Amino acid sequence: MALFKRKTAGKAGEWYYCLHHDKVEEGPECPAKDRFGPYGTQAEAARAMETAQERNAEWENDPRWHDSSSRGEGGGTSG
Image (cartoon, rainbow, N blue to C red; front, side):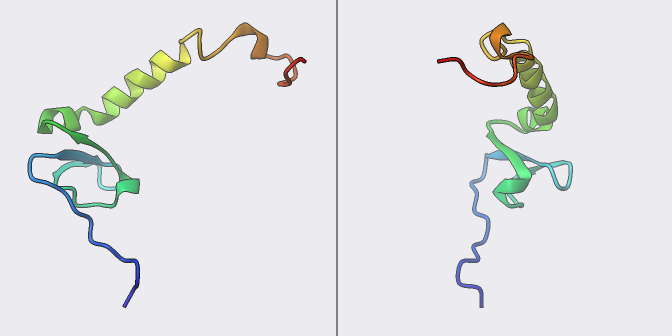
């Protein structure tokens, strides 16, 4: 018997997107490392990958994230 093995617990009405099975699940059914969520609706969970892509694109183009002094300057800080 595993000492720290826990069953994944969830609540009805919480929706997740399982990265391992590429499907929406209510509950959740899979471990936290394999899912996005919780989402308030099944439709929101179904869009999880699109939402992640949109957020990644926003961060990639955010000037506060990529300042000009950190590009190609050897990666060090001055001081």
